[in-house]
Length: 394
Image (cartoon, rainbow, N blue to C red; front, side, top):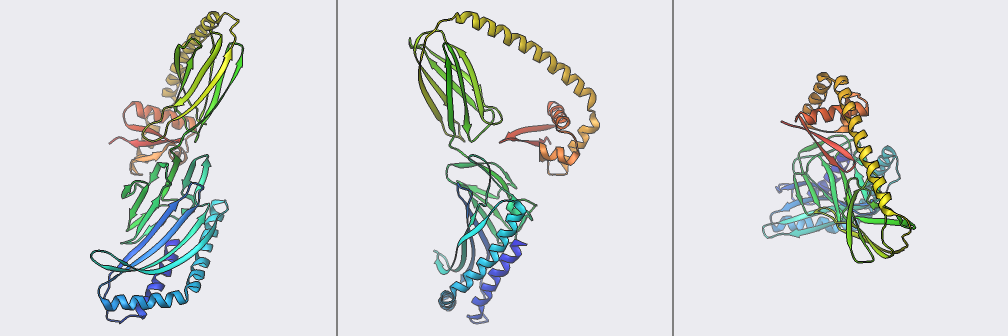
């Protein structure tokens, strides 16, 4: 519906162009280009553009006359466009359940010369406030504003530009072309409900950490922002004597981490908490200095801790094996076939949450079936952000 309204507006403007030019002129009109430039605060700058191929001086002169007339009545055109899109944004706001508004509406008509040809360009732009949905610090989702999907006619193009220092966790559907931070889809293309659907995340990882010290007992705790699961955090402890020891822990589903130590040397310790980074996210580090006065027998503490961990490991393995045997008995091949059929009918890829919703299985049952199918090599599971994406193995 949004697409039809936008297209009608553009076609009306094109009609005015044609009325000011000789009726027998033939010209090439490109499709509509939609450019959505995302910002870190969740706003988005929309630019909607139509190009008209001007093949000779008569057409260029006619378009120039139209441009002159357009600017005389520009306020009217901009106001009509503003009324139109304010209603679209209001509808999107009500459906998404969060406040949105349009600002800084503008329009322009100009001539664009390239090496091979000249184009007449009609362009409208505005700022869509709160276009992206913030789901956590540094993480945004773009989908709920496309409640009715989206449609590109032949010759149309949709370009979404991700903010600098951000990257995508997932994109549905896959772009036809991608460069730097730009994602591009070409028409004709029919997007399903809530598509295009993408989650973007800041590549700048901040390690927020602190510690508590009770004599020789050290507790380290913190969080990574954006809150990502399974990030490896290095804890480097440097003794007063200069000896260096490195430990590794991983973040939980909320990006939190915690570790306790028993220190064995009095004096000033240096501690570094480091996220090393990778090809997607940037490195981050925190440094601490603290004084320690060792009084107790740390060796005894270490022995007790090691014994407890060994016992815990044995008990955990026992219960995991018992649970797996019980799960295999409960869920049979019929339930596995349901999941395989569902994946086949959806192009071989669905999120685990979508599988649970579509089958009506419980969360635990879905998880067990996915693990069984993965162990049989029938599917592959990939962790993307906080969600598992399931792929059918052909």
